[in-house]
Image 1: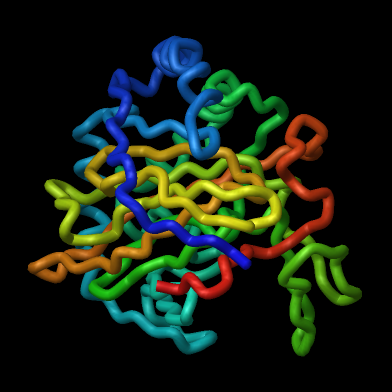
Image 2 (image 1 turned 180 degrees about the vertical axis):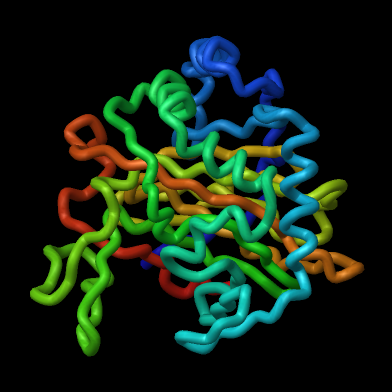
Length: 296
């Protein structure tokens, strides 16, 4: 039986970045805060404000904001700009799958610049120094990632992310939990998922408007869940965390901006060819695992 404790979480204070994209500035920051990352609880993570120049983050926010009212649809194959999905596990809105989720140019030059930066070798080297994880690579297809614009009522239930993602031929469903790929299914991610980066783009966001990123503590058997930390999705705030079988997260407080503004973010994921250095990742692939009974 799973024990579930929804107490008062610590509201995370962000580390201040340099607001500069140079290799030297990034490496200086990574070396300075590597121990902060590795010692964080409930699992390895860091929250950074102003890692990128404020003007660039603000311009990207405006580019996403300009697309807020474009059509949205949940229908497969629909040509609407936004793709929405609503299930008991979450209500979210993004660009959909590949290649739409990689098309930064449909937003504008600032979004393109950020996409290029977060997928650059310079930034991957920063992540390796900060986290101690070697041989990282960015996912050029951004499976499950890209821009998100979560409208009123949007939420995401508690889960841990897929360690590899597979696509299957028509009529075949991927294995949702631990196992090997089925015949007719192909792994489409570049290795084992190791890091998530979430960049928030919401000016003046207040806690009562919902959408705070939540970090929860558990054990490998998922015998308990303990609300630990929360991160307000403020403009130019970045959360980076290690993806393992126990990195439970979500945002249970649904978005409720008084003027209908969306909760805007960019998501990028990073992979390694092996997991020899991480005992908290099962060697059998799985899709995202949602905690039973805890849909918002």
